[in-house]
Image 1 (tube, rainbow, N blue to C red):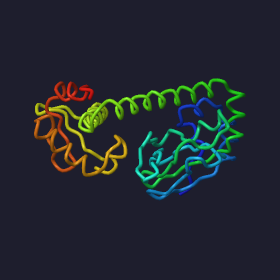
Image 2 (cartoon, one colour):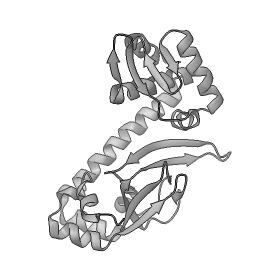
Image 3 (cartoon, rainbow, N blue to C red):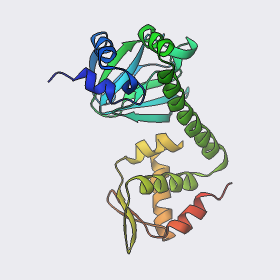
Length: 231
């Protein structure tokens, strides 16, 4: 089934500012790509030729250590974009991007994007706002990796998940943990085995209840205090 490119572009945080005719012209110059889970979109250091609009699925941006250990920087979903930085600075892609799940994306030549930014300052400002949000999250990530132990970093992530998707009840705040332990590890700078032990410790301390992939935060105030205990 063909993607409605105009609708996909309109759904983004900054191309949605364009008029119908401009969206149509941009759609005509875009190309659709389908990625399987785990498929690489681009590598850190690659020449940046395009900006990508995520239509379906999710794309994660990450860096790899020389030993092959992955550190996730951010994950973007439908309605978002990835690969904006080179449009502004002309450099290569600063991170590697891969499909977190089966995904559909649109590629747009960075020259077309740059032209739109110059012609429509509001779009450029919206793009800068999006990147500023990511910069703040990167600052939070650096703080977490440098100041907090794995258990604290895990607690912070669980609290964020609960605030986004949790359902409150008398027993606490419950949500389905959609990430595997390996995926959690790549997000908070650890390894799978350590995550398993950290979850067990949080449960032993009666801060959470783990039931399969379902997590219940039984004492949000105590877990939040624990999450702020810097090393």
